[in-house]
Length: 156
Image (cartoon, rainbow, N blue to C red; front, side, top):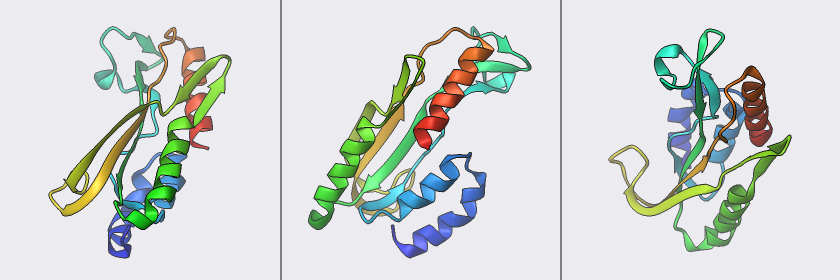
């Protein structure tokens, strides 16, 4: 990403959840990344007002198994294609496994775009969204701990 764009984004890093607080700024420095869009570390619980109506409650929170998301605007520079595509393959194959349950970025959507993510700033790029879906599990505290463990392992 361009240095000026990184400078604009850096004050926002403190609002990111751990452990992606370290990952997102590292992605900005990859030579084939033009911009990043929406990113979420994923989680299993939320405030009751945001939880699924039929999900039940766990303690004072509601069930809300939310996917982990990474959104990239990749460069279309011919000199960076091999490195970019190698990174894309590695990311699509990354996984975390515990007790027979696995999460991976196996839901990928990409398209050619004329603008940076979530903006009207012109920039030709190949935009790609990677989603790691949280598996369907019984709604228990043990499941919450497993999901959180998987997500943390995945990001680490």
